[in-house]
Image (cartoon, rainbow, N blue to C red; front, top):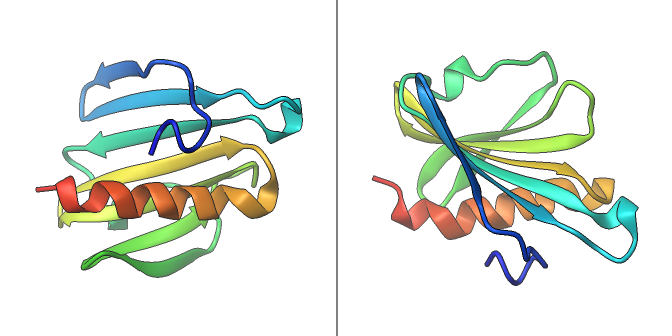
Length: 117
């Protein structure tokens, strides 16, 4: 999936109290088409704990409840997948063409959902 998106960089892992994340960057020939992809596992925050004031759209990812929302600047799209009441996985696409952000986030979410506990 990573190569299908045009991502050629290695994941940049980050671990902090309460979450583990990886970031990839897709560099495209046209800079405005480039984007970042973050996948973050929140061990202590469920989808109800998702921060932000943008409207949230309930969605299904596989058999799991999820929500889709824009980030505060509307430059990114987040699909937050319910793992348990107290944990979730966020797929976050930042940058790139606006109509593609949520499409990419949903596609990646669908690919990783079967691997979640």
